[in-house]
Structures are given as C-alpha cells and as structure tokens.
Length: 157
Image 1 (cartoon, rainbow, N blue to C red):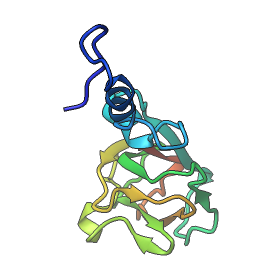
Image 2: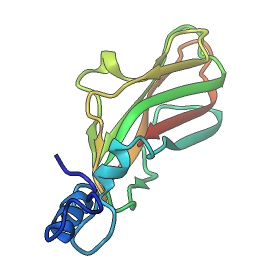
Image 3: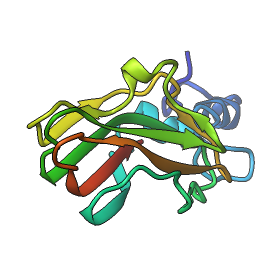
Image 4: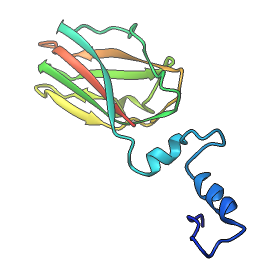
C-alpha cells in the first residue's frame, strides 16, 4: 500500500516512496486522475435537462445535450416533472444516448401516471461517455388532458 515517506527512516528511498504515493491519484504529467476525485467523494452531482413549455405532444427529441466534460459521466437518476399532470393515461418520456434508449424496456422509462406530477427513475444504462449526446422523446402525453410544462432533469456525477 502506498504511503508518505517517513522523515529519518526512509533514507535513500524517500523519492521512490513519494512518487509511488503520488501515482495513486496523479497522472505522470502531474494532473489529478478523475477516478481519484470520484473515489475521494469530491465529485458532486451535476444536473442538466430538457424542458417543454405549454401542453406537450408526442415527439422525437431533436435537441442534443452533449457531454463535453472530458470524462465519462455516470447518470444517477432522472426526474420527470409536470406542472399540469396528465389525465386519462400516463405521460412517458424516453432518454436516448446517440439514438439508443437508456432503458431496457418501456416499463423502466420515466412515466407520470395519470394525475401524477413527478417521478424519479434510474436508467438501465448509466454511462454517458465524453463526446456523446442525450436526447429526450415524449412517447405519450395523457389521453384526456395532456401533461404540460414538463421538465426532464438528468442528474450525474
């Protein structure tokens, strides 16, 4: 296990011990490894999302939300909310990464049951690689009253 050098007892090996210790969390160029930051618990949740103003209609997502962070992100949850709840049937959205759903089945997609205004789910695919993008589709909106003013909030580390 790596450790810091002990003054007075690591004569002749001080530099090797220190370098071994630093390589646990640093790249050879001195930059901090992203995995070290996450492992230390310092990487906080971030969020991004999609918003539809007014009454929602079924539609394929055209707006792209890119991961340009330089690292692979992990999606920890997705929250769907509506200011006006759907009635008659559910409001369902699908989140896609590069055109492929993050959910293994429609039963796992963010779904607001009739009269509900919020739901939180964890996607089946949680990795969001650098340079890839997410889109959001509205698959259904409610059969009596369509949901309105919806927000899809994607939380990731």
